[in-house]
Image (cartoon, rainbow, N blue to C red):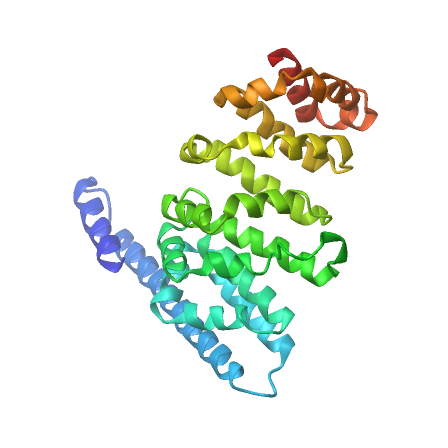
Length: 303
């Protein structure tokens, strides 16, 4: 990084007119050195955080609040893609994953927040996490066998955060998508959309929509008609307008991409037109949710 910035300074001033003073060049050089020094300070602090977290794993007197604060600092720093990559290079990922595997709920949540930060739009970290087989581990935090109605609040929160982490690893990453599908990702999406946890439903709906919109291989390879009945059930029963908007958006998109899905929509037994009319007659939709109104009208026209 330093060499690239140094070259930019030199080449930039060679191309500029003679009016550029040597003082300007010195000022820019100083600013670059300060920025790079600041980055080195961040990485040094990151190493200290990883060391503290590693030591706390072996301590029987770990302070949960202090650990949460350290994790928050790490997550904040890792919003920078370069810092996230360096967290892996300094050996931070195994420590984070150790907390993910901890029986302590709060530690799992902290680890998930960092995984979301490092994987978000970061192909390098996404690939590393896929190679570390993290996706199947995250699946285990979204229980498929337990009845949704019996889930305590902590379990539901852990599930939706895990779904968020999965989505960040898989989104716009073909390697991640292949691993996700092989691990049973479609079944996971179906179950999660039918959960009694609105947060998990919404997180899953956003994830599924992004897969459809941003990854053509997903729509081509997955049989999206298997989600149709689930979508219709959500439109009929959900009170969440955010969820309804997301599901409708996905349905409208799929009718333009998947002939089988469009054929499903035209089945009069499913009463889709009636569902659209009911939504359009909802004063909250009519007055506040223009996107839902547009999607309803588009779907009715498509039928």
